[in-house]
Image 1 (cartoon, rainbow, N blue to C red):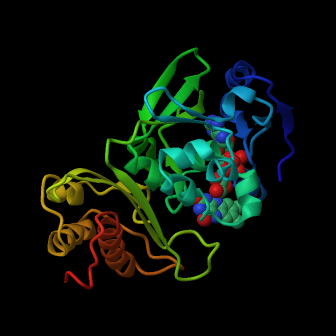
Image 2 (tube, rainbow, N blue to C red; image 1 turned 45 degrees about the vertical axis):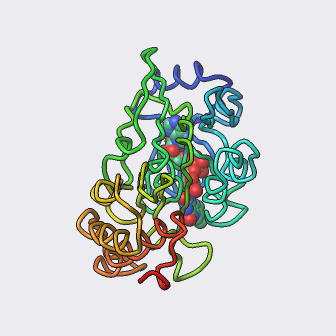
Length: 293
Ligand SMILES: Cc1cc2nc3c(=O)[nH]c(=O)nc-3n(C[C@H](O)[C@H](O)[C@H](O)COP(=O)(O)OP(=O)(O)OC[C@H]3O[C@@H](n4cnc5c(N)ncnc54)[C@H](O)[C@@H]3O)c2cc1C
């Protein structure tokens, strides 16, 4: 590993000052669970590493007055998994953090580090896309901006975060009245694996059984996490039945572009995307696919 200089920033301003001074020679370290591996493999070779662990402003989970949620970048997966505020927002949100790797990793790894690392098979991105979340970013130039979650990921392990920017928090808007969230991670190998495919759905159904709200996030199905817009469009305003869910879910096959890897061929994952999209929507709509087939 290349020798590097380390400083622990005490505030966001200090972290941004390091960005200004060292430019692309600096890497922030959050939980370190990915960065250290990347440094050991020589994939990232910073001259300066700046620790974010002492910055209090980057930690914590707050419920906003409108019923939304704001999660600081340095919040660990385990803190979000066990958060009463997150549970009150939607039980499936903390549950989706509980399927990441092992407790040891979840105690160390942070939400901000996860998003910036941008592995397309990670669990938080599809959930946060389904929830219509935004990423709150501050820059060394003094500016701040908000990036919709679905626009944050630009390529394999790449994001639209600028070199002079720091991810401050994730903002989750209030859940639309009557909508619910579900996340399904397909794990045919081991319980602590990355997803073979994953599907997150936010769904609202009106008293007539028609779909009044739907957002679908997908993981491990392309070089970035995705939103399944064609499936959403096919179901919005439609009566939800086993047949309509099946027909719409089949459209996901053309929305994804999976990679062949150790977890399965692209064709297999495309088919699993259809199966898990259908099952996740049906579970939220309380439709038994076998009974109603
Ligand atoms: C064995 C193992 C299994 C895993 N399994 C899963 C899994 O099943 N599902 C899953 O979702 N994830 C999984 N992960 C990933 C894990 O959840 C972490 O989220 C991820 O490793 C990075 O988080 P971190 O806090 O350790 O970030 P770090 O490793 O510290 O940083 C990662 C990158 O983010 C940058 N960064 C960190 N914070 C900020 C910030 N606030 N602003 C700007 N840049 C920042 C760093 O500079 C670095 O480039 C696994 C990791 C390991 C090691």
